[in-house]
Image 1 (cartoon, helix red, strand yellow):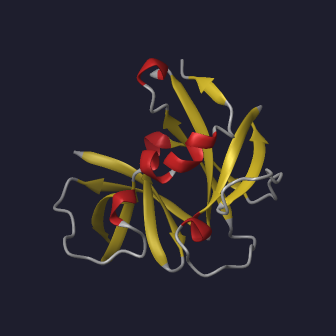
Image 2 (image 1 turned 30 degrees about the vertical axis):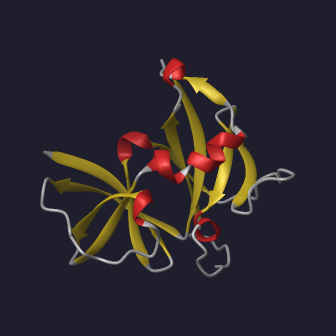
Image 3 (image 1 turned 120 degrees about the vertical axis):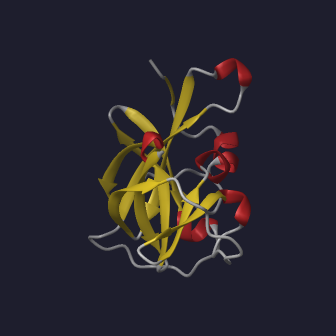
Amino acid sequence: MITNYLTFTVDDSTYALDVDSVLEVLNFSNPTAVPCALPYIEGLIYSREQGITIVNFRKRFGLTEHEIDKRTKIIVVEVPSPKEDDENHITLYGLVADSVQDVVQIFEEEPVKDLSSPIPAEFISSVLKYNESAMFVLNPSMLFKEAGELNLGEKISKE
C-alpha cells in the first residue's frame, strides 16, 4: 500500500501529515490574537471564508523559538469532530512549520522502533524511515485536541 505524506520541518526534525488531512499550505501571515487562548495558539486567520485556529508547533512542544521568515508556512489541516453526533463536521487548524518540504509516497514498510522523538509519543502515529533519517508521522486528532476543546475555529460540514 502506498501512502502520500506532506513533509515539513520544525527544529531540524522532519514531520509528516497524511495528505488526506491537509487542505492547503499558506504563506505565514500574522493571525488575529485571541484573548485568553492557550499559550501555543497564535490566533485566527481566515482562508476560504473559514476561521482557522493557528497552533505554533514550537510553543506547543516547548521547542526553542524561531524567527518567522519567507520559508515559514501554515499547514491547514482538517480534523474530524471528536463527538459521535458530529461525524460530518470537521474543524480547520493551521500548524506553523519552519518549512514545507514535499509530498512523498511511502510504500508500506516496517516502522522505525526505539527512536527518541522531540515531541511526546502520543502525538505521533508512526515513525518511518525517509531519506535515511526518521520521519515522524503526526496524529492530527491528538495534536489539536486541547485547541479543539476551546472551539476557536469555525466548524464546516464535510460534503
